[in-house]
Length: 130
Image (cartoon, rainbow, N blue to C red; front, side):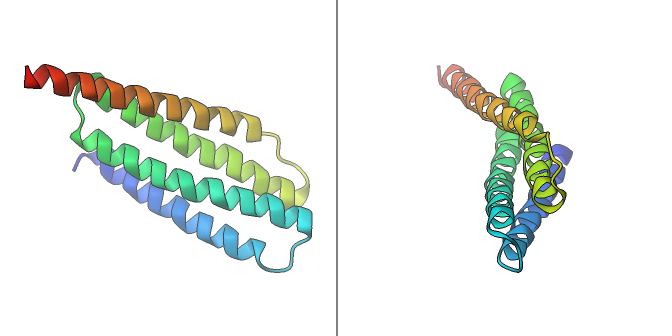
C-alpha cells in the first residue's frame, strides 16, 4: 500500500468517527435547527469518508494520471469535509460558519476528478489489453 493510500484511509477513519460523533451529538439536547445542521454535517462527513477510502484504494491500483487524479479527488473530499461539515457545525453551535459553499464546491470538484480518474484508468486498461 502506498503512503498516500495509508494516510487517506486513516483520514477516512477519522472522518467516519467524526461523522458518527456528530450524529450522536444531533440526537441529544439541540434545537431543531441545530439538529438539522449537525445531521447534515454528519451525513456528508460519513459519505465522504467512504469516498476518501474509495479514492485511496483506487489510487493504490491506478497508474499515471489516473493515480494523481484519485489523490487530488481524495484531497478535495477531505477539504470538503473540513470546510462544509465543519462550517455547518460552527453555524449550529455558535451561529458563525461561512465556508460551507467552498466545501460544497470542493466536494463537486472531487467527484468530477474521481470520475475523470476512473475514465483515465479505463483508458489505461484498454491500452494494456491491446
